[in-house]
Image (cartoon, rainbow, N blue to C red; front, top):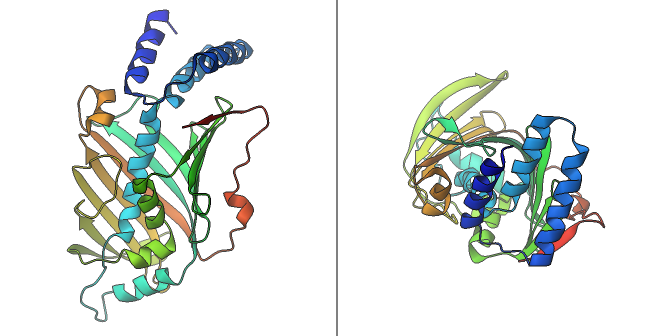
Length: 302
């Protein structure tokens, strides 16, 4: 990577980051970066590692993930009422079925774009999510086949723990009030407690992977809890007509919040989410929600 390009990237992320490491921590990270880069023989991989180290020190990564998390939580923010007849699923039954679940697991694809182009380095990521009314939420995020982060929002400990393998670092911080609300929305209990009335459009029935589903579309961000302002939100949910449980959730959001658009020169950013492979009320051991922090990782308190 040309020296000037690297300096420009570092400067961009430094300006939008709210985290300022101590000088000795920064020096140690620089030494680590040099050692790691020396081990890589592929020029392309070396370039990617350099960029990822800069990105993971920036708050933009957390905010980008947060936008997608909020979109996923939209399903909990509306009352899925409506007429019930022989061709329309009983949406009240959907709510009741979700309410009885204590855990959720899913796989998600998250994409961030600006002017129809994926954001550099942050464009598309894959997420495996575990949510429990008892323990909280865990997300394992992967980018281009490489582990990007493991994030734990822990109810009992009232903290957020993020493990970053590329940096051999871990951040720990108390949950903010906004994060607590978001976390609660992501659990089955939150689904039951956040039922509210809203207008929606029925999308009819179709088949997804051989499963007959019925869908609806909801627009509006007035009930969304988010760390950044979202200008518009659209959510589509497809429910199994036999089990009354969601099979696929699609969501789009657009933001012009300057905290994020600083990264795009003030241009709007679109976040898209596709969630599937849901499992409801499955056994989730407590160990899943216990952060596994290697001994040689640096722990940063925020």
